[in-house]
Amino acid sequence: IREGAERPFVSIRPSRVPGPGAMAGESLQGELDWGFSQVFGERIPGEEVQDADIISAVEFDKSGEHLATGDRGGRVVLFERLRPTKSALEAMRAETERAVDRFDAADEASSGLNGVQREPVEYRYLTEFQSHEPEFDYLKSLEIEEKINTLRWCHQSANTSRFLISTNDKTIKLWKVFEKQMQCVSDFNLDDATRSATRGRALNLGPDTPPLSSGPTNANVGGLTGNRLTGGNDLLSSFGGAKNLRVPSCVSTDVVFSARCRRQFGAAHAYHINSLSVNSDCETYISADDLRVNLWHLERGAAEDAFTVVDIKPENMEDLTEVITSAEFHPSRCDLFAYSSSKGSIRLADMRQNALCANHAKMFDAPEAPGSRSFFSEIIASVSDVKFSRDGRFILSRDYLNLRLWDVRNENAPVATFKVHEHLRAKLCDLYESDAIFDKFQCCPSGDGAHVATGSYGNQFRSFDAATGASDAFEVTKDPQRLRRVKLAASGRRGGALNAANAA
Image (cartoon, rainbow, N blue to C red; front, side, top):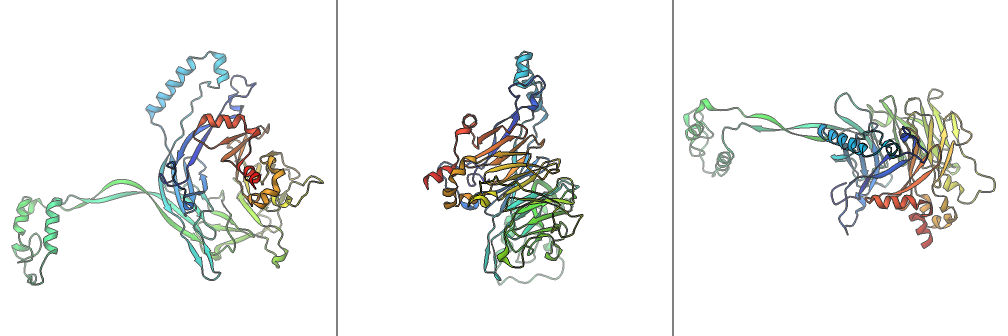
């Protein structure tokens, strides 16, 4: 994110194109056509990437107007969307109208133009701040690194200030980002050269200088008296006498963005924090570690103010069979949240039933096919991420090999299963030996729920049509031609994990 220092962050922007049998006016029902949009922090050729500069968390706010990234060095960098000027929009509309005029009605329908104006998407650097520093737990002799595990935007305040929460392994912090008007003193009576000379003469006084006189005299004007500093009358005459004296004033200059830590939430998690999720009530959020899910209020940060809503820690740790891997609030219901486990199950908890959600309201679990169980079954079944759709009707989950879409009303089986790493199933033994089988991947649904996306190996991400299951693989790169080649050859492409497995 820092120029010439951090690992590049590439923004890929989708646009809809009509499907093979699309009619006029149906362009919004087709597949997504991805193209390069913007890159932040492009590296110089041959530059070595520092571990502290690698991005570890990325998050858009709900409006898409702001983007936040966190890295392993504990820094948070913010971007905001640039809106084109009125003249730029008018020029874009004129260019689109000229392009439409060059096509007849049939060509216009097949090209998907249809007079739709699409505003360009571009982000600019806003500000950055150091969110976390390295810490050391002296009681447990444990070093706590500054890496940002996850961050979430809070809801918009009444003014222009923005709030977000970020966390490392142990400590959660609430940050306020606001505009700050810089001010400086102006309207001095003397110019800079005269003030510097006067200040220099006042500082270069010898030890034999007589003390100040107690009575007010004409020589007192302009500074000190006697041999210490003379020329008070000369100073008055230099700007036209005492009547022309001005009182210095503060004037506003540039507007800068500043970040301030409003609250720190700590000492409530015994294990590493893996998830944060802000509630729709705009007042609370949950944080999850391996064995507990805590409910917090944004205005109270003491450890005793954290309420544990899920606790799966057994009395005897030898009886532990699963851990919590992710947690997410319902987008509109403040009493519902979902959390996933390393056994591949997703539990929907209702805080109206019990204060401590020991018993889940629903559980979503995809049973394994008979005869397919192996030594690696439990490892690859672990759910690494879970997300609600925007309307809250569906839950999207990601394990090592598959992406699953669940209907909240039906817990018997997933609505759809998208195979992401099926080609790696035959290489699980090699992946286990190289520890690649424990890699975690995130997922997300589109705003309208028609598409889902997730990460993969080889600097790629996969996009799936939720209705048809059609998939595309894209490499995150600046070269659009290369993007199209990867898209066409996606079915036969192998990721970086397979290459590593073959080498092993």
